[in-house]
Length: 416
Image (cartoon, rainbow, N blue to C red; front, side, top):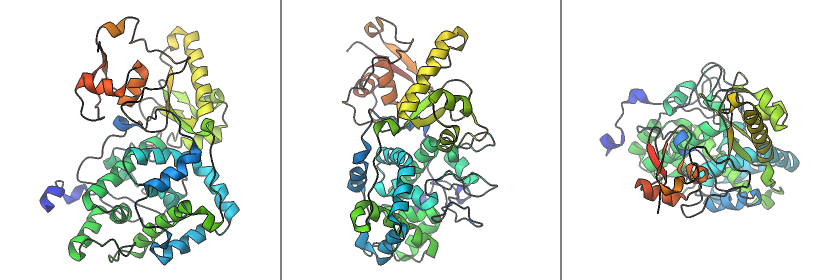
């Protein structure tokens, strides 16, 4: 099976670096190879939720999707869990700070069928901090080096670095983790591969054999740092699993504080966007750290993440600005909630002030309407835009799944 599972030469291996619990870059980051198959394009699977899910339930969703051992799995797990929570107030403050990003990552994990533990992986990598790039060192909250980023399809440049783009990098990482699990059939080994490299772990498994379910932390002879990486991930999951055990209270988040993506159709500075949104520039910059030069370019990134209430304000301001100047009508934005498609049979929610696209004029439902897929489009977003169901889009276009590609022509309205 080896020749089937490794179609690409070893020269295409990637380096994925994972840091310790502090965000400081390492001098010699560990490396990992990329999957042999192409990582799915993030734009084709953008996180587009149907409706906001109250964050008070995020912890139950995480616990319900955990796939690895609990707190008793290994003594080191509880040791690290207690180290994380030795100052309960400090831990709770950290959790409140990162919660919007954690909820966004959890949505992507859910969409890729990745267990809830990995929504907590940025805690281990960087404490959810968008670590700035420095030469060939790891960057972003996922701690990815430039070579790895390019092979994953993440744009790395001086003006825009997708490693620091929460939307782009998260989707690519979740796709990568899903690939590792498909290869090893073990989420523990998927974590090892993320930290130490797929081919290195593959070599160990071929030599030592696949690890048994017990002990919880495999006894493969990996580096101490790789073993600790898995232990730390299990440890923060342990705290989420049993917060009362560590005398901490997990925070909640109001719906209007949840992050949503706003697509920007023209060049816009972060400073201007922050002013329009009524959000401090520093806060907006932290969430959207990928725009290194402070300018949103619709051709590189092209979307902003910000709390829902500020997203609504930004959308209203830019739409009013565009409508006031016919020459700027392309400067429209559309807010995309940051949770996954919850099912084909759910009718996309609409609002009374929702913008009806010009491509769907009155009477268009009497004849087929064709949409050419562009960057960032998903079936759910198109269903929302054209006021139809995802199930209808699949039926009209004879689609078995939800994958669509740029340039594909889709029927988005047809007589049933």
